[in-house]
Image: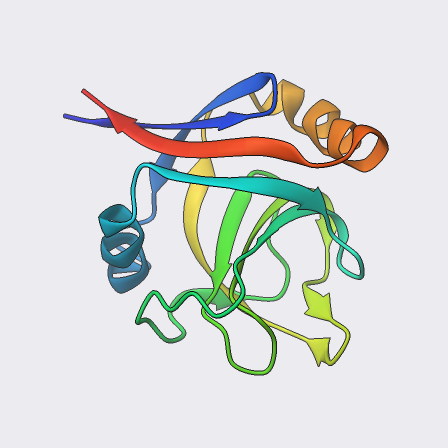
Length: 138
């Protein structure tokens, strides 16, 4: 059985895919793994970091979507009225963009290291972009 790990800046979080709730999003994301990006602090949404992905198309639409991810939940916005992006909530989030409220597919939940989640978010806020990597290991 494989394990999902999220390396975020100097922090490491264990995580799980929400396969039962977002099977198409999980399958599409798995095809892109290991997935690497830069996390920057959100502009409008609250306490979260995001990975802007431009016109990257994962080929999915809405499933298990929310505008209010809880801390430790990761959502994928598949694009449309704003660019494709991945968002990780570390506190209160109302997912939005300059064009208004958005909803993203909740497809990953962090399961360990949550005591470091706020520290990661504040590192991004005060020190700038941080590398982030999603990988599955045996």
